[in-house]
Length: 512
Image 1 (spheres, rainbow, N blue to C red):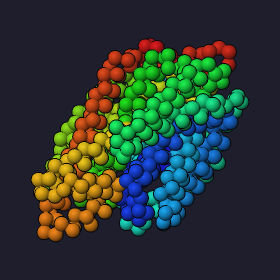
Image 2 (cartoon, rainbow, N blue to C red):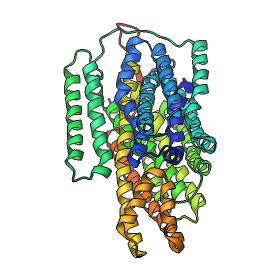
Image 3 (cartoon, helix red, strand yellow):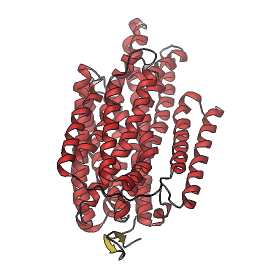
Image 4 (spheres, rainbow, N blue to C red):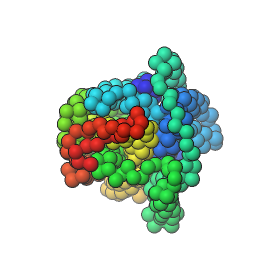
């Protein structure tokens, strides 16, 4: 299961590192390059609940294998993106398909792991699971840096050998494949896809359409209406896609809220940090990979500690402390982003601190939430928690990306005005940075002749200041997570409750 899920974790970081190379080679628009990232996340969010349900209905092993095959084939086709006018639509489409494959693969794999351990050992088992997969995520930046020096296409092809290993190990280990036949809630799946898709579309395109555009507000309003309709339908449905009543469990609702808030900065962090290191610090993709690797030094160790604490005392202590540590880490890290001369040397303690905070929250909150579900619905519960996480990540990338673009345009207009250059030129360079990671902007600035060096420094500092604003917002989100955990997360360990009428068990905590 670790090898299977590792592909999705590696993919979250390896693509971010190579974004500038992909954009330059395929001549993608700034909106298109954001959709290369967000199309994958949005498909994950929209289809996770359906993937978790299918894992319970059709069998976890066969759902897992199908997801691996879809993910791997679409990865290969992303790597085979043709140059020319078809490139943007091609790579975005297969990134969406890749996300769909992950949405079927991940909940099935996680449900297999969860059901393989008794509840008193799950915290430790999941700490190992998330610790190793988190460690494998750290391979993404390094692998992306090395592979990008050869060709960016290899970052997608690297999934193929990992998939082959995972399929061999699945054939050897033969995980359980119990079926629970029941009708699938197709209407619910359509409504949640429609709602999430339009909300994220409106938020992400706000940077292009503008907040005064009716397209932005109509898209968001229709998306929210779709999500409301989805909830209303799920409450009435006899075989719902999501058992909405599970949110009546106070601990599950608190865990889900924390996971949603955590994901707003967590996954987009890799995209923004990669762009910052390559634009503001002027590093190549390999050096940018090392920059991101520092984060996982704290994350991996904290994940192990969080799992042990979960088994001993419950999830509340680590969720509260971790959210606070992450908020402080993001805040202090943001303050050092404009120290371009200090670079990594000035930032690494705060990068590690942020990783520690995220690691203390992610594994315990995810495991505790899934523990709240009876054994018969681990796939469904996993689907719910991962839907929440990936919707948060997708929203985070859309909203924070809009903030970055808007703030950078404003910063550069001010800097260019001080240098006696028109705002229109600043807007063109800012738009180029939003998509290309600085490649196209270099040629624009080069035409400034003797003032090119001044402009380069201004661009680097302006982007650093814009990234600082984004990181301050991330700190604020984790502060909200701290407040939610402090108020809503119940104390106490989980206990197993025998339902009496079958082999399944239900879990209850002291605060539920």
